[in-house]
Image: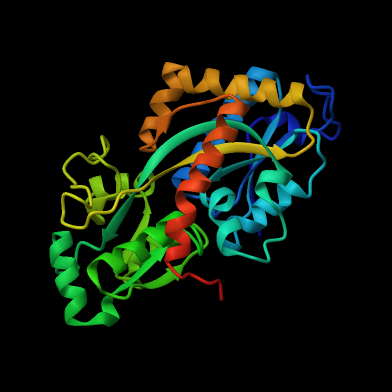
Length: 318
C-alpha cells in the first residue's frame, strides 16, 4: 500500500480551496522508492517548503518498485499541469534509459526538469559483527568464500548497484547483487543479518554509523565525506573508483513554464535558507538548487559520463 504523508491539513477538508496556481487539490510530490530513508525525508522537506512558498497544500507519496520506474511512470501518467512532481535520485533519469531497452518512457522526452536539489556520495556498509574493519579486510574475507560477496542496494539499475559491480571488477571478485525497493529495507536486512553488506547513499547510512549499528568501510567521493570524516574513500582504501550523484525535481513534460519556474525558484530559495540547509545537511546531503536549464545540462552531462561505464559493466536486466 502506498504511504501518503499529508504536509498541510487543508487537504483533509471535503472541499479543498482553489490554490494559488489556479488549480484545485493538493500538489503531489512522488518519491519513487520506499518511505523511511533519507530521500523520503528530503522529499518531505522540499514539499513543505514549496507548499509554504506557493501557498499550496502538498502531499508526499512513496511509490516504490522496479528501481524507481513505478513512481516515475506515475508522474509521467499524470496531467501536464505541474502539480504532480517527481523527486528522484539520478538512476531513473540517467541510468535506466541505458540499461532497460524496453523502458516505457524516455526521461529526456517525458519529464520536464525543475531544479537540482542536493548532491551526495555512496557508501559501503557492513554489520558491526562482520569480522572485518577495513575495505582490505572485506576483500580478503570475500576471497576466502565468494558466497560472501553479496551486496544489497536500493534497487536494480541504480548507481549504487553499478558502483558495487565496478568494485567487484576492480578487485576481481564477482559481486552478487541483491536489489531492494529502497535503502530502508536494504539496511533493515543488513541490521538483521540477511545480507552481508549494502552499497547505498552516504545519507542513508550516516546516522546508523554514528550510532554504531553499522560499520561504513568506504565512501565514493573524490574526498572524504564531511558527514563521515573518519571513513576513507574507496581510492584511499586501495580501490581506485569514484562516483557521486544527486536528487532532483521533475514534473511531466508539457507543464506550464510559469508553474515550473515558480516551483524552481521556491526550491532554490529553500536550499539557500539557513534553517532548511541545516535540515538537509542532517540528511548527509549537500543542498544545491538550480534553474530548470541548469538541471537539463547536468542531466545530459551525467548521462554522457555514465553511459560508457554502465555499458562496460555488461549488465542486462533480468
